Image (cartoon, rainbow, N blue to C red):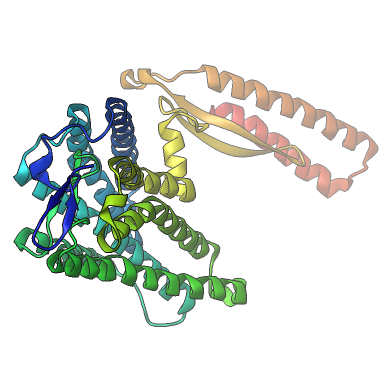
Length: 404
């Protein structure tokens, strides 16, 4: 591997934009592998997050305070699939960054902004769950207005952490075999190191401390109370565990990247080969695919709506079925369709097949009730009152036929 000597440090050629025209840093099959993985991440990240956005809007979930914050997380991941993956995918196909130095700076800034936004949003969700579960009787409430302000604060906080390299404190350069751009992790200068320390403290350490503190108390409270006195409902528990799973998934995706970056910055950058730098970066980029799966999988309303969208639910989307429960005989409850509407409704017509089947079904129960009524009348086993009641039900069933 070639090195460049600077005034204060030794830097590998995998980090500087000026070196992207050098020899390939990966074998050609390595770039093909990276392009394939990026295409899959881009496709599933775009499709899954768009699906959740559509479902949340369709089910009007965005109107609740908690879901406003969750919606922010989904939109952040969706933005990565639109403004991030296409650039890295094209660069992987071309075997180098092809978008120019300015776009490298903007790409590095925007991806860093969205990454910090995601971890900060998860931190806010964890703390919000802590307040709900551990301080159930406090005056704390999360209103829609407060949620909107919280989302705004998340973006401002993230911008404060990621804007400095655009003004000289730190730098955004190419990374991962020159197919992507991010913070310059390998330049071991005072300028670079102070910014990276700042970024790690407020972009990773503080969020992790808040998340860990929140969930230690959440789990402790849940075990202690066991939902006694209505302090912690099953719904609140489910949401708390959902956020926890999201946090674990995020850390699973970003921890390898963070470890490699810290090694490059505070130990020996020459240990980080192009191959070693690419794999953690790809894993980190895959994080945009996890949250929509977790959210739909652990949210009953979204899961039901998703199944309906895939035509898996019992109700067909092409028909409208209305049903009514009738009491037939002494102990039988019969669920039958009232009306089946079809495309002929526009002409004022109704399909009579369902009504004919319904009449036939009711007639069978009337016949059965008639036999019971006659038997009771002969043997007088049920007494006069019960026999009269059964006769009334028989008359009601006969009336059902006239209303069809």
